Length: 214
Image 1 (tube, helix red, strand yellow):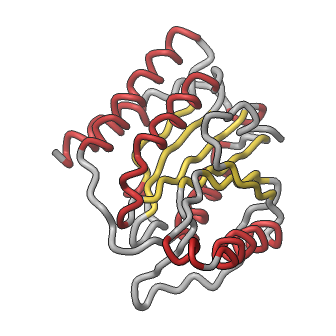
Image 2: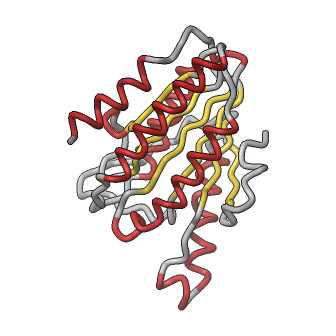
């Protein structure tokens, strides 16, 4: 099954066309796959469908999981730069959707949550696309739990990048003390803005029209 998933993802990755992303838009979606948050995948699917319907020929799109060690190519599920020809771009979107369906149908919960590793991987990929309009979407409760020995004490390269936290679920301790939730969000806002990025939170996923605003 893992080989099948890789084959589907590779189908998306190689069918990138000849477009240059230098004048386009690039979007990298990080999906938290840790613990009980995997129950939220239907909402992640809705975001992916919205983006596939919104992104245009020449734009770039990638989806990766947040797991125990997210600074890794293996965590990128699918990535593509859509061809300039609309018909070919539509074929690429169908292949991308197929890869995501396969991934979510075989999803296993990760033990840890390496958000900063995922953000670093996302920033590197966005830079490689050459796109001037760069977005990282983080579908997570923003509770980072690193495996023993993992070091993430670095400044993220997020200059000129929009970072949007999506579906930031309130954890059980947050319900007892809401300040825990506010502190967690403020901590990530500070990390992103100190790295030169812009940070927003969108929890109402029925209103995604402003998701990719500059």
